[in-house]
Image 1: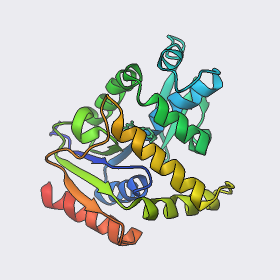
Image 2 (image 1 turned 60 degrees about the vertical axis):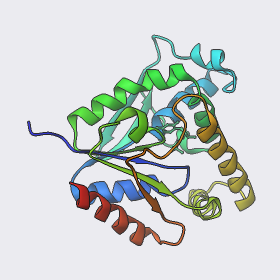
Image 3 (image 1 turned 135 degrees about the vertical axis):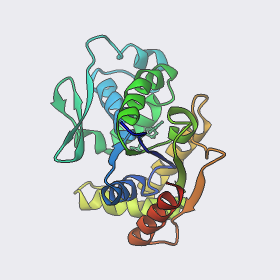
Image 4 (image 1 turned 180 degrees about the vertical axis):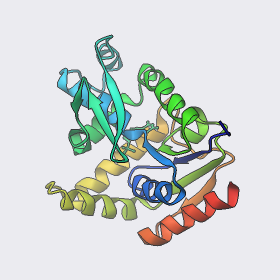
Length: 224
Ligand code: DC
């Protein structure tokens, strides 16, 4: 088999990574892998087990031999399964977002999910998005992009997305959650969110979705 092509896209919550990555992957004929969904699934499992997600040893105790986290592609879309149950919708609540951010600071959780991510990338042309893809998971990725936007622009987009899904939350709450998650994600000891030295910086604060997608596709096509 010829060499696979891996694109790593990292950046803070709400920068549009998943929407932009999905659209760019469709255009290029690559699969799109959302690694945040893995951390969210570990977070939802911990919540369901009644673990205090801010307590690292409580979180580690939920990573049992019985725990089964699967990422499947159904009709080309990534779905997450927790012990056989499709939790793709359950992992999107604000509570699940906070739990994901908390459990992602635990080194054992990152280690637990590492091989799964690595294997997916080794076998597929893919765009993989997350926080540490270019720095830790795929340090040799063919293309690395750090996708960001101002906290206000990101909170505005995320608020619209949650409202459209029927979730009842205010812009101020979304912005506060976002600032807290940004802080957690970029200040944790293991694999903090940061731009890889060889990543291209893409700031979408002033761009609409279509312009952002075009920018990312042009960066990728310029490199492969
Ligand atoms: O991208 P997202 O909002 O779905 O990610 C949920 C949380 O998971 C986020 O707070 C940070 C964490 N995460 C991470 O630490 N590393 C990744 N590669 C992806 C997500």
